[in-house]
Image 1 (cartoon, rainbow, N blue to C red):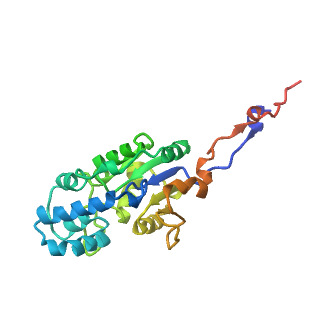
Image 2 (tube, rainbow, N blue to C red):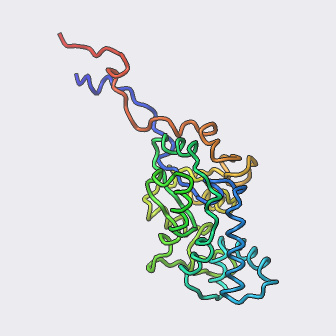
Image 3 (cartoon, rainbow, N blue to C red):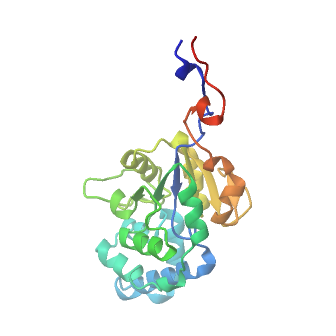
Length: 261
C-alpha cells in the first residue's frame, strides 16, 4: 500500500486563485483628496491644452466620464486628438502624492494572503507606481495591468462604450476586462475583483468575476460584497487567507504513519 498517498488529508480547494485590484479610491480612501486634485488637473488640461471653453468644462467632463469610463476616453471618442503621455504628465504628473501615506495594515493584509494579486487600473504606469510606492505596496503585487497594457499599438476595440466608439480601451468596457484576462492570464471564474466604481463592478460581474465594491456598505446589482474600506476585507472574506490546494501529510499533524511488519 502507498501509505504516503493513503494518509494525506486534502484541504478543500479555494474558491479563488487571484485577487484583482483597482488602485485609485480603492487602495486608498476617496477622503485623501487625490482624486479631487486629479479632476482639477483634467479640467485645466481641457481648457489650456484643448481650448475648450471654461464654462462648458465641468458639465462636459462629468458627462464624458459617465459615458466612457474616463474623461480621456471620452475626449478621444468625440474627436479630440492629443498625445496620451502629455495628458498623463499634465493630469497625474502634477498630483500632490504627498497626500498618500504608507499603509502598513493594508500591506500586511495583502502580503499575508497566499493568492495571486494583480493590479487593474485605467491610470498610466507611472501613476500606478507612484501611488503604490507612497502606500508602501510597491512589491505586493504579482502583475500590473494599466493604461499602457491595454492601449499598446496593436490593441484595438470595436466595442462602443457610450455615445460612440473610443480609441482608448478602459474600464468599464467589457473589452478592457477581456483583454486584462488574456494579458494577465486570469480566470475570471476564480478571481475576486475590488473597485470603487459601481459601473466597473457591474461590468466585472457580467464577465464572470466575483466583486467587492469599496467605499460603501450598500449592496446593489452586481455587487457580491460591499465594504466601507479595503481594510475590512479579512473580516468579510477570511477564506482569502486560508491555504489553498495543498494536501496535508498526516505525519505533519501528529498522526502516526503505519509501519509494515
